[in-house]
Image 1 (cartoon, rainbow, N blue to C red):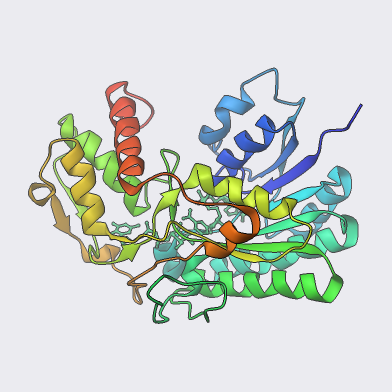
Image 2 (cartoon, helix red, strand yellow):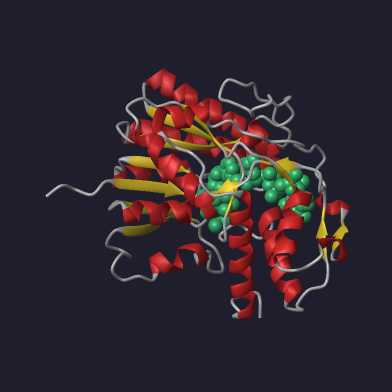
Length: 337
Ligand code: NAP
Ligand code: GDD
């Protein structure tokens, strides 16, 4: 009988890690997820897997560890010997990275070297996905059709700088040791599992709470920033597709359309029959010392090489997130009673 492929995911409890685990389990993989010890449960996004006795501890396994702990990572990779490694773990909040620059560097930057070293010494045949980011482009002038893999980087936050270190580390390990390592340069991607402190989910959660009388005001920072927002579920498929290619490389994953935070507000509030101007107030606490004003990606290389293309429209994405949060709030789910 053919053996299941094994995947190791750092950041399995996050938005992307949870969608990727769903996707790989569906494909028949054995999935090993790195989980951080926490004083409260941090498995909300994977409970549906974790609590499924058909899968849990049969094809889905959680292992304690941390990207700052190289010996733990080395031990895990030595034990598991995965076919594919997806490095999604990170301190991923751009605004917070200004408060925690050193920690962000340790986890989001040096953490990548720790897992790359663990791979090199014990799982050199594995294929490796590095979660790189459109934050790398930061302050560069954007070409008309969007940033491509050929455009230079100019990160604008400790998070972006840490991701730059990881991007180049991944590339260097590929070239120096001939390892199968790919960078996905993913533009913003959202879903009903997006963390509630990122702007899209903060907005859709507020829409649901305001609509049902649980909240009056939503405090936000810069409404002029523009982002290329896609659907996280589709983006994790692109991660997997990259690792199925014979040759490793770097790919932009994006929708090719960009919208401002203000346009997101208009769409989300409008969909619920609300006027955002009556509810949104400015709070300077949410501004960043240096902002990334404009992001637009050109994913034509990913389409050309492995046929990936964005399918969910901006409207569909916003409506799906609002619908989900309306259901969640009205059913009194955790944190919304
Ligand atoms: P997320 O929801 O914030 O998830 C981050 C994950 O990393 C969580 O599972 C978190 O664990 C884990 N983590 C944090 N610190 C860690 C540490 N020290 N050791 C091990 N794990 C740690 O992020 P996401 O949106 O899924 O993004 C996934 C990856 O893609 C991240 O690397 C992010 O920077 C990158 N990225 C995201 C986007 C986007 O738009 N979503 C775009 C480009 C790149 P806890 O649950 O315990 O906190
Ligand atoms: N979080 C947040 N909260 N952002 C706000 C707010 C607010 O109250 N008000 C305005 N914004 C603006 C931010 O200034 C930024 O310009 C934009 O909304 C998007 O912010 P986030 O949703 O926090 O995402 P991000 O673009 O900074 O970073 C996300 O995308 C990157 C890819 O480009 C994260 O997922 C990163 O991990 C990822 O690499």
